[in-house]
Image (cartoon, rainbow, N blue to C red; front, top):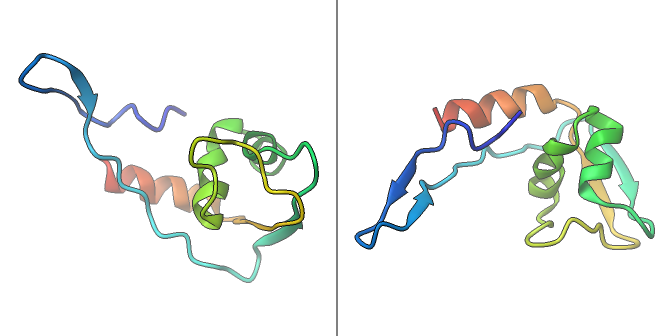
Length: 98
């Protein structure tokens, strides 16, 4: 899944290309969410692969926890929420950006 496939590519007045604004859905807490404590070596992409079998879905865990801006590392000792309803989150993302 390429989350940018439906995002328009625009050009500024100098001809430089850029992507249109990406919109993300709210990720509400659910009773079936999994919580872990970040350990050394934990990364968002590795957690996404472990829990979703797709490392490209790291952004779901990042958005749910307010982390991952410029860094895929998970803070050691931090409580991390792993949303389990990732399919509906991806659907909501696609709806917002279609």
